Image (cartoon, rainbow, N blue to C red; front, top):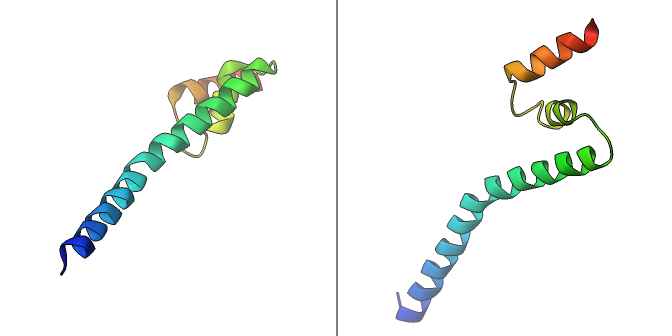
Length: 71
């Protein structure tokens, strides 16, 4: 392999690795922004967090909050 081609392959590998490593961070930051926007609009902070992150996290806080609302 020529040195230029090898450099291109390494650069592409580094860009792909960075994308794989940074995508979870971007998703988390997006969820946090959505929660902050919901709270600014007047939503209950715990309810907003539990509703938006329900598929990624099931915390005791969300279960307690849901049971409290049913009573």
